[in-house]
Structure formats: C-alpha cells, structure tokens
Length: 98
View 1 (cartoon, rainbow, N blue to C red):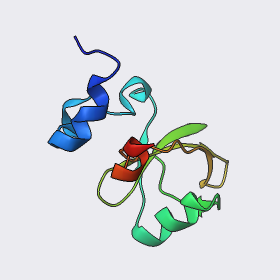
View 2: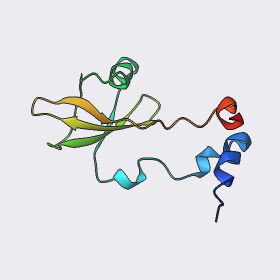
View 3: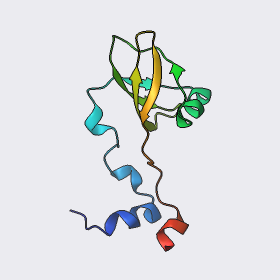
View 4: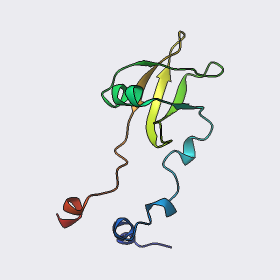
C-alpha cells in the first residue's frame, strides 16, 4: 500500500516501472505501434495511416519504443485520429519543487 506522497518519491528512486502500465485497463483495444514520424504527427493531433487488424473503432497508440501515447479513433479507410493523449511523463525536478 502506498500513501498519496509515495508516488512523488518514485521518480527520485527510478521506480516508475513498478507502477501498472497506463494502458492496462485498455487491454481489450488493439495496439497500434507508430514510427517516429507518425508519433510526432499524432502528438500534434494529426491523423496517420496505420495497419489495424480487424475493424476496431478505437485503438491504443504506442510509439516506436512501445510507450503508451493514448487512444485513437479508426475510420473505414484505416486512418487513425488521436482522441485522448494524456500527459504520462514522470514529473520533473522543477515540477516537484513547486
């Protein structure tokens, strides 16, 4: 069990990997892995073409290192539009000092 203050210390100890993955609850959505250029476009809110198995309407978006980026909507031609892109970066030292 962790207190509310304990996650703040995880970044200092390098233990962010001990937390559950951000996309864990979205395991039923297919994952789409994007190349570096596609990742940059998605992070700017732009649509990308992707190979999506089956015909889902929503997918999990991952970058080239398998880092979760967010959720995308798929249309009938296979383009993916980013819909929810949470800020999942660990807090920086300046953020913790505030």
